[in-house]
Amino acid sequence: MTIAERQTQPDPRERPERPEAPDARAWAWAVLATPIGPLLLAATDEGLAQVVFHAEEKTAAEAVARLTRRLGAEPTPVPPEAPGTAAAPSAPRCAGHLAEAIRQMESYFAGETKAFTLSLDWSLITGFNRRVLRELAAHVPYGTVVGYQNLADRVGEPGAARAVGVAMGSNPLPVVVPCHRVVESSGGIGGFGGGLETKRILLALEGVLPQPLF
Image 1 (cartoon, one colour):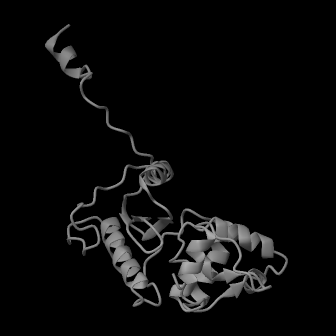
Image 2 (spheres, helix red, strand yellow; image 1 turned 180 degrees about the horizontal axis):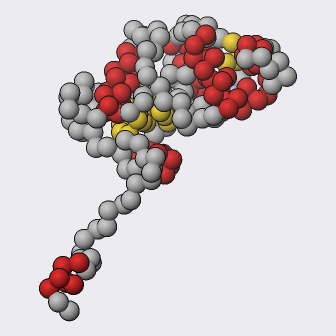
Image 3 (cartoon, helix red, strand yellow; image 1 turned 30 degrees about the vertical axis):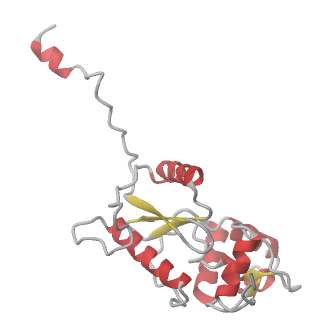
């Protein structure tokens, strides 16, 4: 083997780079401690893309693996010492969106933020589900609730109350896109992907339900 041939042979000790998909997008994530448990927040250059409940180590790892496949790229590292501080001017946009999401989420749970003003990346959801969730985000404010049927009526699909429930279950941006504000017309609080206790805590935080005594 000549010197030139040896130079072109891959070194077995080197880890091959993972090729990115043609539409790969930069993204970053962090886990935030909150009164409803750890939340994983993930942001792309477009904005906040996903919020994951109960993000303990195993759940967080599974969520990161799914997002890596969906977005076609490994996440951008975020400095561990201050994931919620303002991103440096040279940082990728996804890091800036993530930092702002953390800041506003902390303010929300402190009872200060009543309306999120985040850039959102809606790419993880499509069709009817996206229409319903965009309507919910835009027109059901803090401290109010809406029924499944009413939300179906608002998007011009009066026969789709059950499909609205499915859309709530597919919401990639809970808390920010407030599916916890969707309740049953009979007065029940309805289901919730994060668990009914989490839904009660969020509605109590917003003054819809009384705060628990214990």
